[in-house]
Image 1 (cartoon, rainbow, N blue to C red):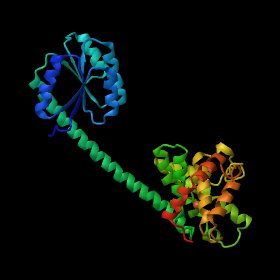
Image 2 (image 1 turned 180 degrees about the vertical axis):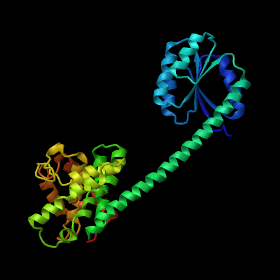
Image 3 (image 1 turned 45 degrees about the vertical axis):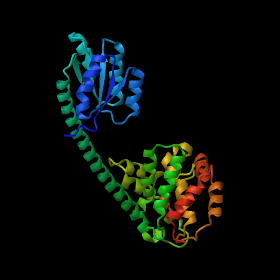
Image 4 (image 1 turned 60 degrees about the vertical axis):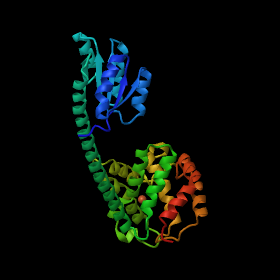
Length: 340
Ligand SMILES: [Fe+2]
Ligand SMILES: [Fe+2]
């Protein structure tokens, strides 16, 4: 058992109990910080990561009850000891009901308090270790999930030859656009891993259509378009947020802002944001890369085209965000170069 990392924050108004707590904590290396203001107490709890236990002196103030419940709204695991001279049962019930862990009747013997704190420190230690183990297990599982997503994305690339690292770059541009839009870290990560799944439905398209060097006939094009619905059907209905987002992207990445896209001819903001983002990322990357049916375009030609499609094919606000940050998109190309 180690109690070296235990930190106590003490809202203290009583000199005698301050001494008792110090006498209990100093010999076993528990750190105690003191404050006599509720405002400070709350700010310190919110700003300091490593608070294990809060001590609060209580003399019947209503504010103490409020502060205990607000602490627990912030961190429901935080251990709160209330120290008081009040012996009244009703008062104790009120304190426990507000969420306090222990009600310590003063005067407390410092050796008894020390023994309690040692136990508490042991419990905190085991809990911390357990949390660390859970966190590392979760991160391994997440890593595996992300690997599987990449493999799934690669299956579409494998069918659609010559695309090189296209899906990885589409993931990175989409993440970039989400970041510049002010999206949360979680949303940015979602784009990074879900955007590469946009063409998974191509698994269901015959190679003769997918890799045809000449223009597709009307019938062939109609078959090609179904990769959106096929992708949605493959990816939807799981419990994975990445696959969920991937399903939305697969279905909507060929919709156009003016309503002339497929498969649902959605218009403007009826097209899911993820789909509107990937539409730009996908077309941008397809143009600057070499494909079976075309040579690569220069960056200038590509940007001219993207600009010309703002408001028709692409969401104008998102196009602006992307073009404003084109330097970062170029960095992505440099780090994951297409086959030229
Ligand atoms: Fe597609
Ligand atoms: Fe693509």
